[in-house]
Length: 224
Image 1 (tube, rainbow, N blue to C red):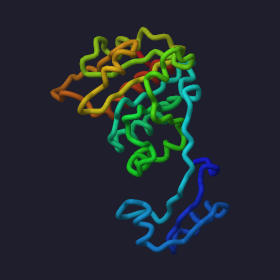
Image 2 (cartoon, helix red, strand yellow):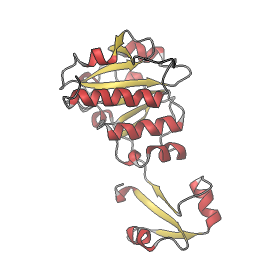
Image 3 (cartoon, helix red, strand yellow):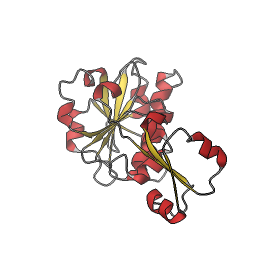
Image 4 (cartoon, helix red, strand yellow):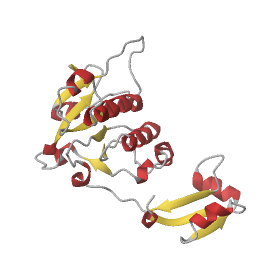
């Protein structure tokens, strides 16, 4: 995490001295265990939390092109799923994550914890309106792909035909309602992940992992 984002650090008494040394250059407040539990929103906090400044990214920062994938979360309201997708996006080398106005606030505590720190590595833009993408030079660099159970194209067949230099913005919807009609209408392609067993579907975070790593395999010449 960039220390320029950190506003203040709270620690409990008796915290490991090595951890204290890491934050010695920042404003530090010592609090009781009960206060720490209230701040951390968990039953067994690790004894150190920080308040950080949120920096909302721009379309220009996220839709960079050059082959790098991006993610658009269309009304994904579950913080655990959103945080896991942000973590996967970071691991797969994505350029950033866009969240529509109906999606979870990425600063939600569970979302932050589920991201395992990746929320501080990946550019994230919130409150996206689809009208923001209309006629956007940044959006024109991307192919927008909706991942849905009824997609017309098998994801692996389709990706094998996409040039390495083409960037894809993957659109994922909430599990219950799925991808919105607005997202489908602006997408360039709708793909599906083949299911070979008896499961009817994949969790949205699992589906995102499949899509992002299949795309990463294409980008790095490891797809077939």
